[in-house]
Length: 368
Image (cartoon, rainbow, N blue to C red; front, side, top):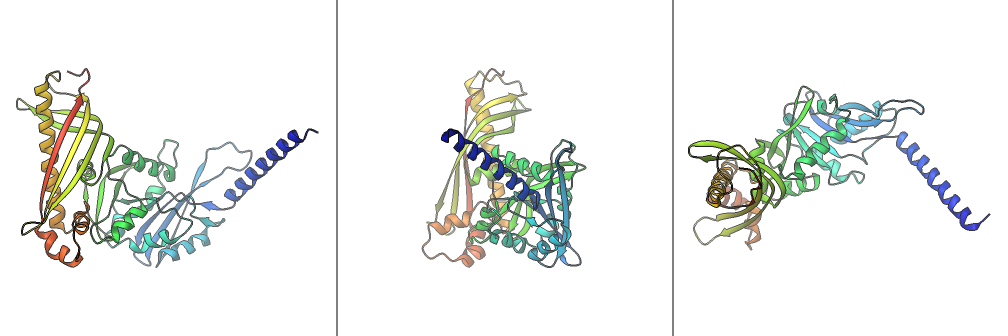
């Protein structure tokens, strides 16, 4: 037999055998895709996990979802209890999502996130989210009715809202970085379940490890613009023309932010300069968008809205004693003798904020 042909057959055989071995390994363990922590009145923690279950050979049925729960005093203890209920070893190497109920998040999440971060089999960029109410595990057992498993659907839902720049993105690594950073506070996406529908409804703000308050989607978008660049976003704005309210949708929205600090006075003064470019996708008003002065008026209206609301949010964060934008991080970067206690007790409380916004509508299409 030709040596080249023989080598090809051997490679093909090894490939088939390796595929069978991989399938067997996956089939012999429960590979967790998503997990949720809730508060348990008796033991402290309830841990719910979901994993795909594969149909037996020869059966024609859709991929199903397995789900089990365990309670315990510690995060590691609940994971040990899971194995006592599973016919196959529980593994977290494919974990994509970790949820927390709002009730648990109000008490603190550090002791649940940290063990996951220390587990070498768990990727440090898995998604985290808060679920309104006291039963995050219920989301993993949702019957979505769309042929999707919750352990796949929910991470894709969150990522899609990150990709469209509606939410400020984060993951486990970034959450812990902010948690242990004395110049900023963490945040996570906030989810809600209504009947069998799961929705992203805003951003959960934290004071250290504890849930503090929430922002709706519009304010989450403004928070995103004050923190980082925005790419390919789509957002609706309300504009006024001749005492009539109308709405305009900007697509391909790009934004950049520069944060400046003036320490020459008695109190630190932070100035955020946000530049935005976007194209009009939809408009329901009566303005003639072919006229340059009309477009300019629309730009000014959007600038005022973002600047005013951005400044209101900064004051709201200041009064609440939280710093999701990272003003403390900016101050520390320009200060040789950084004192986190001084920053928290006096400097941040007395700081002043300015938000300047420049909007440029680069095209208006054929909409009139």
